[in-house]
Length: 189
Image 1: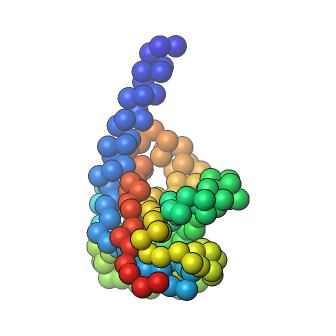
Image 2: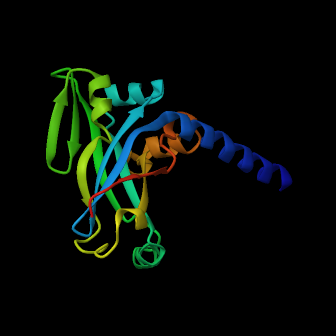
């Protein structure tokens, strides 16, 4: 039993290091506008060879950009309870390869864009401008110095086909994500 605990601890530590290296925030800003936050982000992503190969073999990759409010604390606490401690807002980026046209497709909701190279497509994942989070007026009466939040970008393993989900459980190549990054709050209340 002791060896199993030690092995689990080791796997968690190793996956944390792989997690931290795979996606890094290049930009994470927010502006308080009419009681809402308008978030702008950009991430740098290093796609491991196993994921690149799976992508070219027809496996779509789904990334989730998540937001959490951390201040004001009472509002953040209320949102945590009302949403069962899930992120307070999220947006999905789906990356797929189109072999007939030899292009990559990034889909956000019903909007899709095509890219000639994997590098160009990866730059589009997690890049968003003025994404409005929270309900209108949630932060009314608060000033930018009273508000704080954080974001992260992760590969959503639950969206992979079932055989790949099993593969992902034991492989650091499939554990892809950034750490939580504090938003840089811009002025304008």
